Amino acid sequence: MKLFRRLAAAAAAAGVAYGAASYFLARRLAARLVSPTGLGPAPDRADSLRDALEKHAAVVEEIRHDGSSRLPAELAAVFASPGEPSSRPTILFLHGKGGAASEWEPDALRALRLGWNVLLPDLRGHGRSEGELFTLGLLEREDLELLIAEARTRFGIAPERVAIHACSAGSSVALQFAADRAELRAAWLESPFGQSREMAQHYLSRATRIPAPLLWLATELAVRRAVARIRRDLGAPRGDGGIERIDPVAAAFRLRCPVALVYGAEDRLVPARFTERLAAALPPGSVVWRVDNAGHCHHDDEPQKRAGDDYVKRWEEFFKRHLES
Image (cartoon, rainbow, N blue to C red; front, side, top):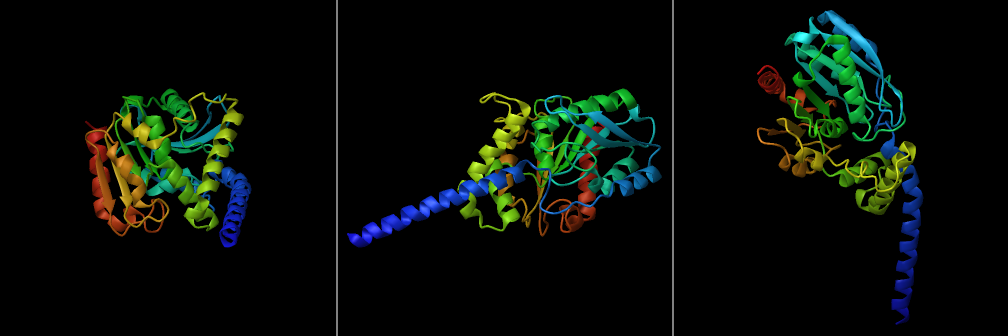
């Protein structure tokens, strides 16, 4: 009996210690979740992107515009066109957490060669855009609506002739933007994730190098603190519903455009298991492509580099079918 009591006391003490450690760790992890910083530093290749676009496009202009009025920030994007932009469809490219518009240089050049406009924003807090929070689409979808409106005013682009190519967490932004948007032509979502909480736990494990099972409580607390931080900065009351709706799978069920979901079988940043629920929620006419021996988009082992010509062929056929019909 004495041994049992000692073991029970030791277990209780360990539980208290675990809970206390999780609480203090959660404060730091919450800031990491809403920060635009990724797992590693992102190189600034904006000038290289601009130079490359100017060699292949008749129109290249930087757009500076206001973001969502709910949390004001001046945002940056680059628009390029082969010429006569109002007569052409447009691809909107969305990078992931910690990334930048300049990551899209090869894809943007391919789109230009096919005769399409390209619109390349630095999401809020990234690249040359202002802002301190990354909200997985809560604010970014409003930022993108304002960007599309600005591009329509300046270049005459047609919102009903826009498609999206998104990478990683940019796919979550794309899903929030595209949900219920009937005029969007198509979306190519690369390395996306469906289970937000599980992904948060995995991401924080990668960031801290703490095994994911040990971060369960800390992640739960961190997510709550992150949501509270967003709500506080927006001045939103508890239970307003806006923040709680930021769910990739729920958004996928509301999509009206066809989707190509592309992921690497060997992706360590967003493991393949995180795509399953998302793939099941996609609208009719969508395709799911699992690329063997490939990792995460915009990494050295990304699907585009592993699949080579097959990737380019599928990409071109997908957007031609939906942008030029």
